[in-house]
Length: 155
Length: 87
Length: 106
Image (cartoon, rainbow over all chains, first blue to last red; front, side, top):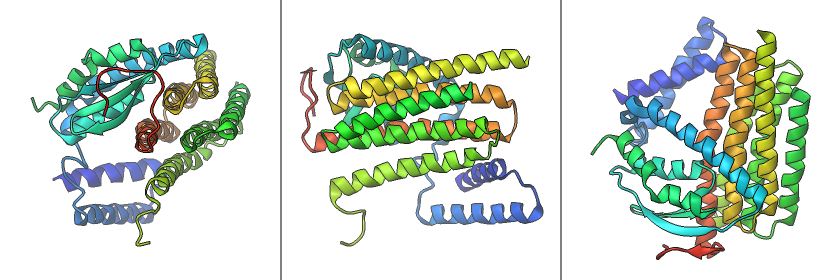
């Protein structure tokens, strides 16, 4: 089942990237996609971690919220760089997700918003470096943590 | 319009080169090289539009991938002293 | 119609250029590695997002748009990974961030 989904994703990517639709090119594409799926299956890469399909139903909603957040923190980071008021701080937060994929998603979301970076992680404790105490407070309110837990949908 | 954006990319590239030269630690340089790669990806796509040949986008995709893999490979070599082989 | 799209592209390019130039200034100005990662993140997210949006306004709907969005997705996924790897390795080599530390850090 998951192999089929991976095959369809790869084939869509091939068709969109090539732009040539003759029999020869499409059959070459099908062959190479099947070979990729075979290699991934042999390496035991197709599981919940390699292909997190349980994210998909709520993904769009989360992405829109994340883009809004990135835009806001881009503006604040630009202000901090121009003003030159830099007071970095380092602290730890606790992640409340169950699976590893969701934890990685949370850490990547923290890093993706400019102004906060995940520097280290042990089990479910993240060490976060923030450019300013405002950015730090944004992470410490746990809003993003709750959003990612909702995105995971296992609780 | 595309020319103005290209000039902005060039200015950014020069500013990043200053950081690469000043350096101090290795991580500063690696970070700056990665940012320079991102700016070059934008520059390649803009140049493709500027000379009205959008085939340049394929090169930009490949450059983005190689930029990522190169950065991670250099960091891995720096951290463990090998790239995963026997020696 | 053409004129409106051109104006949108111009606005997007202006914001993107401002974003990457401020990011590069931050890369020079900020005090240590961990702070500079924020400036690099600004180049990776704000700059590329607005430039790609501006170029999408120029192409309309075609295979080229798909390729542009694909570049955006690649950079969107790979940028936090490189940032995190750099920061993590800097911490492993015992470079401590400047500024105050709240509570016990790892």
